[in-house]
Length: 334
Image (cartoon, rainbow, N blue to C red; front, side):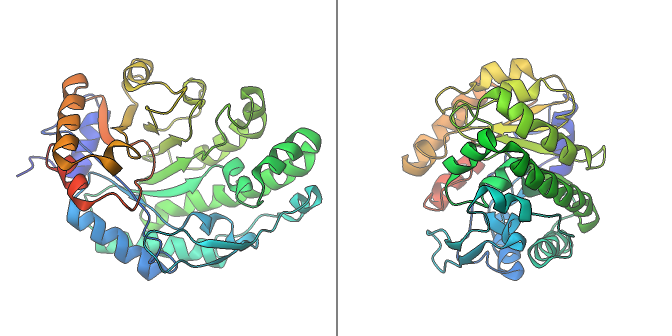
């Protein structure tokens, strides 16, 4: 039996105190269920019931951020296949000027506030809930089919993209504020591929990413349990973690991707109020290894990092092909 609740355990780790066991959380899509609030709630609660993670990263359909601006998709009915995008609202640089702020009562945003409030009502109050929110630049990147075209627009007609970024930021500042009223403890703030040298320079991210990110983060209450997820290889985790205002308590990234900080390098950079989430290679090890190999890898991870500096998790979303046996192998070694 665990000595502490999930909330107590996470709180102890953030306070630099040693809990009864390692904390962990993993997350994945259920593509065939996430086309409705009811299906998303059912999938998230069932996943939590089976594995009893220490916080729930609510994993909605990724394009809930963009649907109210006109993105259209055909919902997947297959657990292992993503939704098929049918049309994008931005096709030319001038289309960025049509992106204006949305209220949180628009259909997709309201639906996902309902997801949060329903999960809160049906889950243990001691389970911290983090709702997934993409950064404004990441949301802009999902409004256009060709991401290279967004980069071109950033460099050739930045004022038009910035119009959209301001509208997206205003929308999600309101949304993030409302998340706490719905029952979330904070949000999982994902940069997708944009905070990476693979797509934009650091100078460009300082202009088109940082100020908008900070506005969204600062719209959350001071006690929010926020997690910054910096995607992709060659990412800007190190630079972002040094900026005052990125006051997230948890940091998650793929420590195995090319050009990224490994866990040891990152934890020496974090102060006592910030904790790494990760350490498990979700694409290679978790997807392809046997359960006994997974268990051995978790033991090695525990040998290298004390309970106070690491919450065990994936570097990004867990592929749906990963077996329950491999996830149980992680959970059973905590």
